[in-house]
Image (cartoon, rainbow, N blue to C red; front, side, top):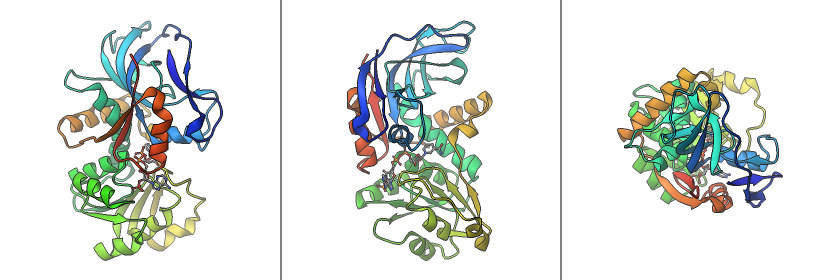
Amino acid sequence: MQAIIVDHVGGPEVMSLVERPKLASPGPGQVIVRNHFAGVNYIDTYFRSGLYATQLPATLGNEASGVVSEVGPGVTEVQVGDHVAYLANQNAYSQYATTAANRLVKLGSHMPLETAAAVLLQGLTAHTLVTRAYAVQPGDWVLVHAGAGGTGRLLIQLCRHLGANVITTVSSKEKAQIAHAAGAHHAILYTQASVPDTVHKIVPEGVHAVFDGVGKETFEGSLQSLRLEGSMVSFGNSSGAVPPVGLFELSSKNLKLLRPRLYGYLHTVDDHHRHATEVLRLTEEKVIDVHIFKTYDLKDAAQAHADLEGRKTVGKLLLRIPQ
Ligand code: NDP
């Protein structure tokens, strides 16, 4: 089977398409999925670059959709031929993957495999952030960074659905249009204007919460944009990791600071199932409207990484897995 692997960390050029041996039969509670689409997520670039540690050589990829091709002993959740999506454990950029049956998201006939791969990880991220990291309330003011990106667009849509007023940041006028179309009330070109100054012009007391997946370059401005008792949700590092924070930075406004990881909200099978069911329902009802920027062939995965890191993309990037 074909897969994209990295045997040392670095830029997109370290990714290569290789032939790998056929997978062993699935163990108890496991299935093998023939992947059709893999989602490209910023986290994949961290494992490739070495920002997040992984054992090398590693296959990349944390989300896929496909068709169950083999089930292990004791599996009752799915059958061969079922369409599924799942959060992969570094094995999505691959023709086949072994995964736990009880974590599969079974797809109805009306849910295209492409859409499921595009919405699962970023949808779960956005949904857990707005319901559990900071429970967005009607009338809240929120700041969502990188609002034209995959996760940012979905955060805007969910915050609007929950009745919040949304300010977002983007790096270009074209991206501002995308963010407005997703529902943002205000879009700040953070490459040109000061974020906290602009936020305080829009809402003088500051925002109730910031959802910040950009990290290093936006962290300080995010704290400055918050109101008294505001919540800082720092969930990513697309511009680099946030340096260590002095606790006293939070005391002047009694701020709350959270650094959540999606998997921490999906610890139990029940939590995983509940959030995934909700994300698919919201997608079917078009509350979440995923925008697929481009579907790349598996062999072009390095180009997908380069485009994502080069800030050339909006919405979601997918890989089409050869069948
Ligand atoms: P995006 O589609 O949002 O792409 C990243 C965006 O970040 C870019 O499009 C760009 O938008 C913005 N950006 C700002 N500064 C930079 C920079 N210096 N270099 C590159 N991009 C920059 O990616 P994802 O939706 O996949 O992920 C968004 C964030 O969410 C990531 O930090 C990711 O790690 C995090 N995440 C965290 C999870 C968790 O469990 N904590 C789970 C899922 C995602 P612009 O051009 O408008 O600035």
